[in-house]
Length: 481
Image 1 (tube, rainbow, N blue to C red):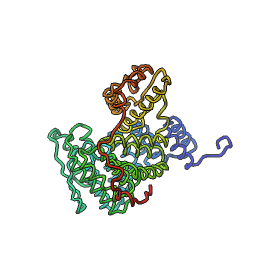
Image 2 (tube, rainbow, N blue to C red):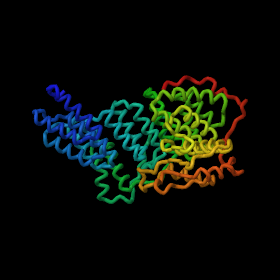
Image 3 (cartoon, rainbow, N blue to C red):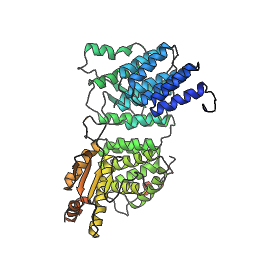
Image 4 (spheres, rainbow, N blue to C red):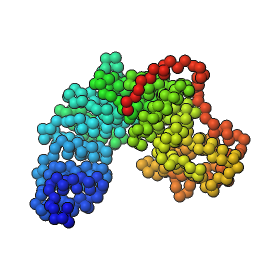
């Protein structure tokens, strides 16, 4: 356009700023800002929102703070998107006191929180394991007449079982949820003043940030009351029903993940039963595989997988990971293997398998372990067919770049323990902590040993005869994903 001597207007300049911000090309974004100044177009709230969002997405929190201060110096009035963006940016970066300051300014501007702001706060609480506080915030949200969406509920369900600072008791029948908070004795008087600043008006938001700040500082409780959290989640399900909020495949994945984090099969069954209310088909497949049913249930499972296949790759793989984790966690390891092999057949995890390499870095712990067994069985069949294995075999897990200790990936540790328990001749590669390697000759020799097949073949803890009564799965409704 510039080549054609066509001038840009404010809308086009702001569009460029948004694109450069999302791509992390901030030098180009600043050049656009200078060009705007040279042609007499001042940055407006849309311009600043684009820059703030871009800096936040790239984790440039100091730059976001600088840009916000510049915005105020130039007397550009923030709007609700500005505040929502900043609170999201600071919350994701763990800068909860900064988020608290932004919220104070938000209230001083006379604005009212909307579904976006509430959802950002709920998500921040859930990401930090503060499920019960998220539940209370959700309560306040509905009382304010703001309708939550399915994404808000998914955040809470998926956070189940993570570390929390509070205890929760729910009266599921009455639909009420009661929060019980206990002050930590390790919080100093000075810290308590900072955390309790929200006692005067807008209590819930200010205490939310205070609680997050305390969590980050290490003041929060570590004991979890899993049964009480289950009751909280059941209360969440009831609210979704009351508001007629339709769950989606992400909701189902979150419920399955929550089941995997339960302390007992009985607790998991309480949560799994909620799937029957949401969708009989998903419940029938999950419950049937969990109880060891096969033939009729697998027909339903394939139909369900057909529908999941229509989702984007990350959503589909998340569902397979969640279902497999639950099955593996409760001893249905053969069932878990059937699910991952079906996922492989449908290319849910791209390029996961070759004769020389197994790539597990996009898989959950249960799915990855089931896949290792299947892959090694396949390699064994190659050996017994008289074919030569590649010179080097690799299993990739990722090295845990987000872990506090480099190389301390949860998946890596799980696979290392599995390989050790099998007696498999794989070792960690010196140049790559997330890669297990073995020479083809050593692997072939181990696979030929008489006891290897026994450790590779998976079994279910619970099995039902083929003629078992499957009436509970015969009338399954169609799933609208």
